[in-house]
Image 1: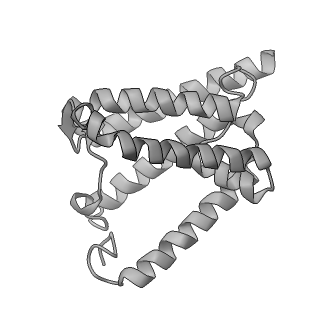
Image 2: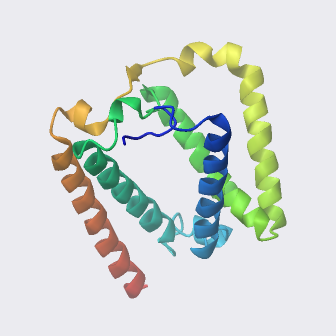
Length: 192
């Protein structure tokens, strides 16, 4: 049997939605258990006081990438059927800066805002309202920013494709970078 299961028609849309809800539930559960519903922990990275967020994010990136490429190499996952967000370099840089500014101001991203709200944090509800308002404003302004939004398209690019090297080399480099980053952050936290 090959994955992705939904793409191969092994279950329908209803089961697909149930799987998405279950994954979302466990994602939120683990965010909460990791303390990532707390805005102080989330913004701690910007103040160089808490590095939980980059540790969690880089761990997730490395584990997911290793798993995806291992399953692909074992012919258990068809990577051509895994949707990759198309890259539009400059618009995504600007979007990332806006996202980061919102993250620093509110202490939340969309997933952690839901987690914080589930914990009963009122500020998370305000952050969710801001996320909704920003999304609505973007939808209203889209006709005016569409040309920039579609500027600098690179397609469904990945680091191995972009660099033109084997994916295991890229994964080794990313894993080494993450390990080095973890080491430096741990040393910094102990020193302060």
